[in-house]
Image 1 (tube, helix red, strand yellow):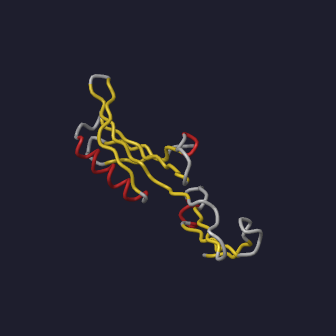
Image 2: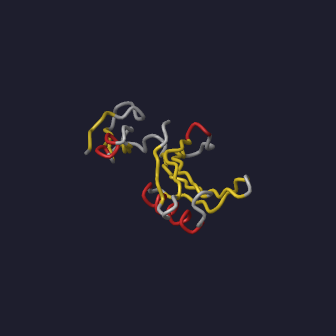
Image 3: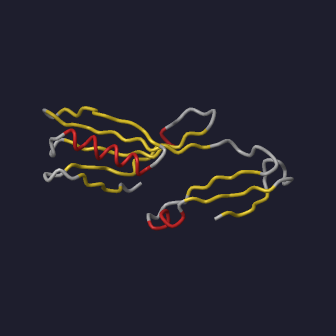
Length: 136
């Protein structure tokens, strides 16, 4: 769905096309839909990149160790990679993971304000991975 909006970057000389992605999924998850704005006259504001980072942890001898980790621009791909990493870990009571949503802005250093843990994953005794949305 697209909506024309007057561009504030070029003092209203151009129109921005705002493309909203994931409106139905975002409303079901009670989150804001992501949007990308492109002005037809100027370059517009800086571009923002959304990444989903996944980390697997293994607890052994009451010490938590970082296992495999990675990042993806797709939430589904990050969930699949974490699911595979937790299944390879093997030990159900000691393996867990998390998926973090991070926003990177061009020419700025990433900070903790742009980072939010959105899922926590655990491996149950049957070998299946359970994802639990975290409240943030």
